[in-house]
Length: 375
Image: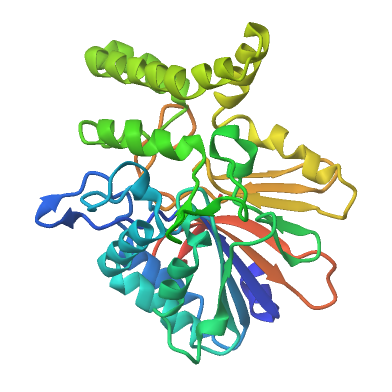
């Protein structure tokens, strides 16, 4: 009888992540191979659904858990090399993205303009430049003065957010050395006062390796698991895959291996450090068990980053959720949809006189009699 129970919730918390808004399908008349978000209408319908009808009077908190914008995938900007990471360059990239997705931005404006509706935006590794002041000011200016307080940018602290007792939300890039960056110390200024974002080396890798190969194979960063993708690529797309693998090896040797060597480390330590930094998209359920072992009352951890929608409830009653992504993914594992989009999100319903909220991972199917399916 859950269809009756949902009307009694006093608050609903929605968690989405990895939207990856880019500069649009076409930029200056040329096809943009770096644009990964193609579900503007679906996003508008999703936001509208949870701010109207049964949810109109209910308190609804929409948490965008990192990578709302993909500032690493904006082509054709007049900034090169390290200038690409300046505050002015980052602002130009953000403007291109916002102008490319006006319907989505308007939907967020409509959402926060309604009673008891709020958006919490957690900065991720693909929109890390949002720690810069000019970008935050520009983003907030997209909303009316009366509603700006209902759009909160979390760009300080340790990147964690607790919307309810026992519920911890973080983007998840913090678990990978390649994508780690400190929200405070990642900003520097030159002698002229120009501010720069100091990205993790993984961001350099995306802009200098992944983006170049995406022009040839748009799916190169969207196939999981990575090992199977490389094996299949060697069989069915041999030359391209070999080129891609060699580019990865060369980049890592130049950027990280030689860096460790110059620090005077022993070969054993160099290989150990390299192995740690090459650990991408590991078993997040294992990596995040430390959260539950801290003894601070967390019973549900929600992350994103890896684009792998997952919901696990353990024998001790604790839960792990990865909210996946709103971009197309291609899976080579049995039991997972290969191409069909899964616009996934977590929904938490908080009821009166109940200690823990009802938690579910859902896939948005559009506005109809049952607009979501449960995963």
